[in-house]
Image 1 (cartoon, rainbow, N blue to C red):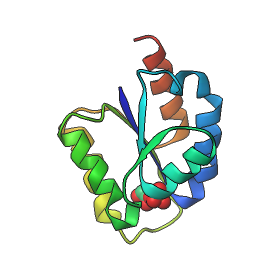
Image 2 (cartoon, protein in one colour):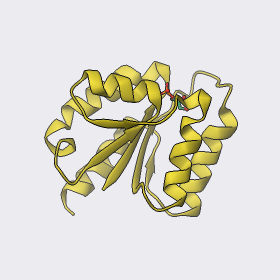
Image 3 (cartoon, rainbow, N blue to C red):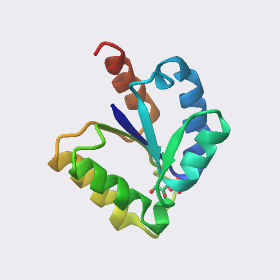
Image 4 (cartoon, rainbow, N blue to C red):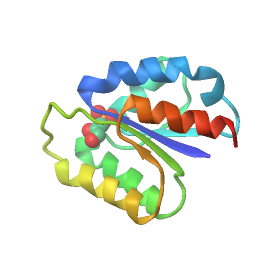
Length: 123
Ligand SMILES: O=C(CO)COP(=O)(O)O
């Protein structure tokens, strides 16, 4: 299963904490992580193997949306910062829309991500 991880700057520390908390599951061989550039770099530093796309503002969200549309990414954890504005808001909304179009589970906060990941452990 390919899982995309994305975090806005104000949520990157939370994402790393979430990844570490769920390390046992996320390091399983059948789980592949992809990420927007900077988020992926942080995850790598924490010891995760991650396929990195471009940074979000440079098109990384759009690249992940394309993988969702192509059926390559099955789950998206997107820790959005609702208190910041983003130059690439259209890309962010496009990724959310593409997940809805293709019925791909998308968590936009940590609590939802944890619930989804708990469900993955039951698969
Ligand atoms: O901007 C982002 C998502 O919209 C995240 O991108 P980075 O992981 O490259 O910071």
